[in-house]
Every structure is written in structure tokens, then in C-alpha cells.
Length: 178
Length: 320
Image 1 (cartoon, rainbow over the protein chains, first blue to last red):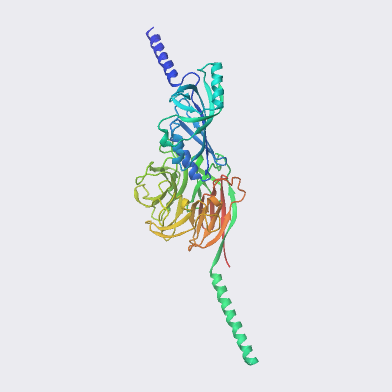
Image 2 (spheres, chains in turn yellow, blue):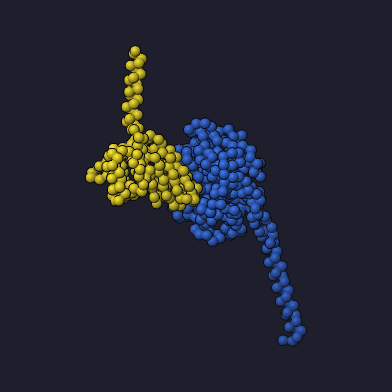
């Protein structure tokens, strides 16, 4: 009987942990792709890969030299320090022409704007206003505001000095309401 | 002028010209020419024995074995001089002892093999049989620390020279890995370096340094004093685009892996261009290659990083 109670307490703790660290629907950053020029030199592309792997939540950086593309493998269930990516690219001696992400999260209101809130890590992306955002909001109104939504788009890099912890802006290219 | 004196003056002129010509020919005979000749190539993309994924540095031991830093496979492979696979070394299991991204290899006179690991910021020292003897280094800018060690050389006394890529310097160690001194430092002036990738030590105990992002080769004393430099950025002969590998042969000639121009250039000790050889059948012209060069006797080996293979050339030496 006592062991059954212990089991139920442990199970309860486990369930709460799962809810906290991996909320239902697995809201998270699913993929990150960078476009970078000048990967022809092995020392530079290896240096970039090394810098990117230092960013929290990045497991592997797969560099496609001929295409000038870097695909980042994300550690499942761990927060990705997305703010650090542009800085990591610069530390590797490059400038990212484009940072694209695919993330699953919920659309919330933040300081009068719409943001995509992604767990874990409580990462927020400011959703760029425009026709695509209007269509997304319309879909959410039709299917339920708390629905998980998958958004793919390009991160608009700001001057890091102006960034100061504000969410990075995400230009929506595609979305899917779950 | 009489007809007779005209004849004798003419004869004298012919003799002078002939003597000068003979003398010039004898001089030319004493100046041999050197040219590259393709011999063989081996390897393909993969992870099996003899395959490569991003082959980078290479070195030869006194028996002519070829050691290749197979960067993206995290191993060093050992071959005969003609490319027959002999062994692979990965270090030992463990976070601090396993090779991750080896980018260069050097062999000392006694057969000790040193490997530079770009990702772990460490130098690995192996016995000739592949036993891991020592590992040193960590990420940083202090003496004895590295920010991506990219190239290695060992001098006749066994001192180990490490091209420390992001720190733009050469660090010198004793065979046990104790820091001795450093040379270079970031800059574009004489004796300064900008992302060096490789170095070679001459019999005369000078160093040629692949000063890759200054697009030149510098000659320094082993204490770091500037002696000479050649090359500038460009695609013409005598110019370089990221010269990332350098080697010196038995005649004192300097071989430069001009990676961004997809060729190797050969220079005399005084810096005169002797020959060049451009990459054939290049499947990936967007990638810098060949990245390294090693020489033993008349054999020249190149690592073709882009096409995952080793290329063997021969130096053909002949009188003019």
C-alpha cells in the first residue's frame, strides 16, 4: 500500500515535470537554417560549425558548402538560445544572410503585438504584421485561440545593441494550425 | 677598311658571340628545372578504411608512410606511399582523449605523431604504433591555449610548432607539451599573421608560414624574426587565394597549396615561380582545395578536401 502511494507520488511528479518541461503538443523550435556566404574555406566552415555548436540547444551544425547553407540540429526538449545565433555566426567570421526557423508554439499578445511563444525556454518571436499574420489570426479565431501553430519564416536580424531582450521579429512564410 | 681586315673583324665577332653563347648554355645547365607530374590519387567520400570525409593535413614518416587527418571522420589514417590503407587512429574513448576534428598531423624524427584537433583545441601525441601518449591544450588565448589549432610542424630537436588559427600566432612547445614561446600575432605587417593555417621548417632551421588570410607566405626565423615574404591576393601566377598549406623539399623549393585557386605552386628558395599544377576533375569548384601539401624525396602529396581524396604528384627535375 505504502509502495503504491510512493509510486503514485513519483508518477505525479513525473507528470508535472513533463507538463512543465515539454508541454502538450511539443511546442518547440524544430529546425534552424542559415544562409551564409564564404563557406568555401574548410577552416572557416569548421570554425562556424564550432561556434554554432556552443549555442545552447544546438546539437549539430551540418554545413552544406556548395549551397552556402547551414542546417542546425536542435536538441529535443531543450531551449534554443536563438538570440545567440547571429552572434555565433559573427564569432565564426561570417554574416548570416538569412536565418530561417520552423517553430511550434502558441500565438499570444505581448505589448500590443502578436508573438509566437515557444517552449521550452519561453522564447518569443514577434510576428511581423501583414497579410500572412492576418490569415493566421483568422485561422486561430476559427479553430481556437489556444491551438498550437507551426510557423516557418525568416528572422529579421536587428542591431544587437537595439535588441535588449526584445523578441526577435519573425517574418512568417508558412503556417499550419494544428 | 680593307677587305682582309673586314674578314678578320667578322671572324672575331663570331668567336665572341659563340663563346658568350657557350657560357650562357653552361650556366643554364647548372640551373635545373622542376615541374610537377601527376602520379596517382586515392580515396572517395565515406567512412570506411581508405575513405575520407574532409581530408585536411597530411605528413610522412621516415619510411614514407602517409598520415592523413581525416577531419570529419574524426580519425587519422595511415597509408603506404602509394595509398594502401594500413591503420586508423581515433585516440581513446573519452571526452578528452577522442579525436573530434583533426585537421593536421606532423611526424617527428623519432616517429612520434602529433595531431591538431580544431574542435577540441588540443594537440594529441601518439607513439609510432598509434598508442596515445599525451593530450594538451584548451580553448583560450593564454600561452598554451588555442582557438582552433590548424597546422603543425616539428623541428629537428623535436619542438612542436602549432599554427593557432583564430589567435593568429604560432606557439612552440617541447615534445611533452610544455609551452616555450610564441611568434606572430594578428596583423598585416612583416612578421605578423592573419589566420595562419600551416608551417614548414627548413633544414636551415627557418620557418615558412602559410599566412592564409594575408594571402602570402612568410619566412621567419624559428624565433619569429621576419626574413622574407612572397605572394599577394589574386588569381595570377605568383598570387594566392588563401594559401593554406606549405612544404619544403630537399632542394629547398617551397610548395604552396593555393587552395582558393585550386592549385599548388612551386617556388625556388629565392621565391621565383618554378611550376604550378591545377586540380583536375574537380567536382566541387566552390570549395577551396587542395588545402595541404607534403613532400618527401620527389613525391608530393596533396589533400583534396573538396573531392575527398589524396593526390600524389612527382617532381621531375631536369637540366634546361
